[in-house]
Image (cartoon, rainbow over all chains, first blue to last red; front, side):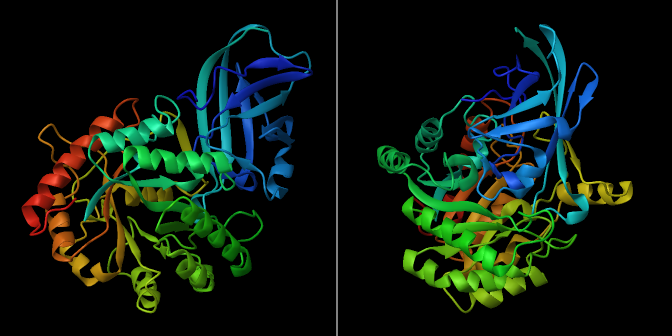
Length: 128
Length: 304
């Protein structure tokens, strides 16, 4: 099951040289990974651009350019993506203000109105 | 005419407060018999669900006495960033969805087509791609129906182009989204997060935003022109009153037009109002109660 919010409570943690945050697809359906144009993550006012965010979908990890080139990878509706953000030392344990901006293409909206970016904000607790 | 529900209606609750089985149980509980799904949303592991899941799906349909109606899919013509899909690329996508829809027991497939203009002209690849999959549609007994959705009018080149093919094969027709009959203003959004649509100049952005919510005021009586080709109906709604009326869509006239036109498909509730948890079940029941009342008032032969 999923949480209502795009940004999920579960999955927010430090890993290696950075941290991870899990996000469910903000759209009302799952999408092919090649439709994704990237994600920007902001923590307590510090923004990490699409280049420093890697995506894990269905156990496979992609950079934003790799998503664009993928042919069979999907972001399933039922499965949050894990975003791994490069940040040496990771984040301090405690409450953080998180913003995630996810950008992807809709085919049935006029091209003048594309791509679509969904922006979600949430306070999340990092335990470790 | 039969009563059905699109599981799109449970958008906020699906996989949060309700499993797929909970949704199907809810549809059955309100007496509806038809179920519509969004392929990319409701099929875990789409487009390759496990055999176990497919068995489970059929088991759930049997348990709740439901009939699959429309399988809503997408033809993502902008799958690649650098260019749109070719016909050769579109065909296997349609074939894949026709086959999966058939495996799951559906008889109608709605491919949401990519567009090439501000007034939503579909990507011209649709025509040849659909023609090339017609043998597959015949083989699987599936009828393909693109959706006529606001802001596309009933009397338009888009509809005329679809009808041109619909007159040549029984496996291609129309899905009518009743949002085109909206005749009262509505406000608000159904999302708890913010969207930015491209980087258009503010005037264009405001114009498009307006186009997406303003009443189109299409006349339900005009359905008479297209009824022989209408395979499926999305009974769109954003809200229902305590008097069990729809504040935005003139359903009395819509149902009358469908009954008069001899519609034999499913009236598939499509709730698109606020996504507050636990709201959809109540809203869909309100609409189903209204639809049953109106069909009974207008129909010589009662619906099931």
